[in-house]
Image (cartoon, rainbow, N blue to C red; front, side, top):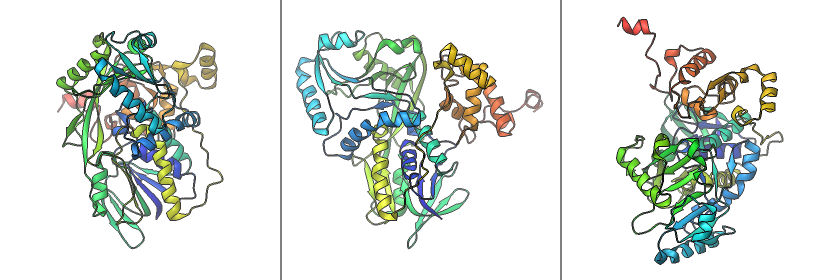
Length: 480
């Protein structure tokens, strides 16, 4: 019997797990995939929004602004990269500047500090690569960037170190409400809990609708992105948005915390909640729209493209709270943008609900500190030599594109909730995220995973399930 079961190990579910791990509660996180951050949390813009976009009075507005203020502390506690690089919303037509002022007023009402309208010359002095047709921009200095999957992993590791249990490859088949508890039927077992928290992303409607007569509907909204080489990462300093017009919302252009350049996303509703492939039409669309922001998009420096799914709720706001007809069942559903920014604040909101229901005591030994994997690529020569002297495995580089060492890969596998597949290592270390996109290092990492996990190399997968990297030994295949 658990006190709390959280369904979904994305950034929202893991933020909730970490927040509740401060209490004397038995907590379990159920995830249908093989790792945390396997859904929307691994494929999004990584933008910490300032909060000027959401409609005043909504949960999106309230939790965005509150969450934004929490990131400096979280980044320090969890040892994750975070930068307040600021954001600009560009306007290209004098007749639209009134909308820019409306957006600023909305932000002020939401509580966003230090907003201002910049002239063309002020914009170009800050961002000289911008389209010279810009006439004005809204400037939000509190906007920031973060690595979404590294943030999620850090939340999960800290929660795990504070006693939270994680069950992977365990899809929820059904939930049965009994008198004072819930029976949760998973693919391979059944567990029981006093409280269920639904943080299932694009599948949150299905989880809610298993137990509540108050149905919700969530659509998967596809968003495609292009990621450019680090050689293009310094083309912009801030996150650049376009003022929405009658022709559409446009796409963002932004640096990443790892030094790349990112453009996207578009927005295409899909009936398929697993449709994550990119399309030529989609990539062409985001490049064309990004060229309004910056005329010389470095297309030849593209190293990869990817697609993420956002849980678009038909109610047009977050759905957070206890289901009216199912006491103890708490939704964190419809968490689309600004969900990443809002996640820490969502966790605190749900913490209050759980404390009110169960009245648990606080742990005396809760530790909010999580130390990340040492990043060899970011160290100076003296720091590198000191690390190698302590652990010689950091002296062997496996991924030349990103300067990732054997020590980092071993740490990624051996840590709490360690990597069990190629993408797990990739998200924890960036091995395979450079120019060659794992063309040279993947074979080495497969061997290391097999040795560390006690498996055959042919059993190692890219992202769990049937995504095996190898078919078998050359001789075995040739004889078939």
